[in-house]
Image (cartoon, rainbow, N blue to C red):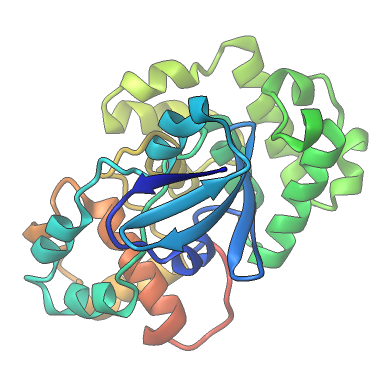
Length: 267
C-alpha cells in the first residue's frame, strides 16, 4: 500500500544526492532507503512523495522527515531577490532539506570528513549491518561499548576515534541530544563541539540536518568558494533565519554546475 505525503514540488534525486543523507539508493526510478529505524520506498508524485513499505502510523515521522510543513515556494520566492540564489534555486528547484535523526546525523557527518559520498555510504552501510538492529542505524549505547579494533572493518580510518567518542558521550548522557533540540543555535553548536572531531562545519551540518535549525550554515570547501566568489561581505538579508536552506541550494549548484571539481561530500 502507498501513502502520499504532500510536500509541494520535490526532486528526490537532487534531495537524496546533495550531500545531506547517505542511506537512499535509486531502484528502477524510485528510491529505497532507511531513516529513524524505518525503511521505505519513495517515488515522486505530483505535489509530493508516494511511500510504500511503511505503516500508517509512520506517516507523521515521514512528514517531518521530508519537512512537509515547510513552504518552499515562499522561501524560493524570497531567496530569488538575490540573483545568485535565484540561479541556484532554478537549477535544482525541488531540493528539500531533510529533518533526520540526530544521532545518525552526528555519526554520518563525522564519517563525512575528508571523504567522498561513495565511501561514506559504504562505511555507514557496514556500520548498520554490524551494529544495527535489522539494518537500522545503531544506538549510541551499542557503539559505546565497542573499541577501535571492533570498528576496523568499517575502514573509516582516523574517524573511528571520533565515532567512539561521540557514541560514548551520548550514551553516558554527557551530551544530551534531546536538550540540544531545545537550545538556541549557538549553545547547541558549542555543546556538539565538545565531541572529539566535531568542528564548526560538522556541528552546523548536525544542527541543520538533524535538528532543523535552519539558521545553521555549514561552510565546507564548496561553500567557502561560493562565499568568496559571490558573498565576500556575507549572505544577503533575504535568507535571514533560513541560511541553511539557502546554502543547500548553493552547495548543490556549486558542486554540480557552478564550479568544476570532484563530487565530494561536505568536506
